[in-house]
Image (cartoon, rainbow, N blue to C red; front, side, top):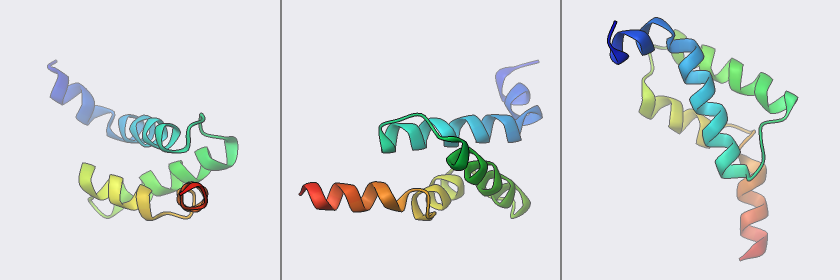
Length: 77
């Protein structure tokens, strides 16, 4: 099995891990339990809509779990 097929076979797991890592990088801390629940729901909605990587990133960046980081960053500037 090549990498592409392996990732496609576990697309939900891969998308969840990717979203969690992106959020952790953006917020500067690992995802909390509440954030993880929100990430799981976001990934499920993205998959149900047939969304790809760009859709997942856009959904993550516009979701309410990401907004506190934007607010904190704007306070620093």
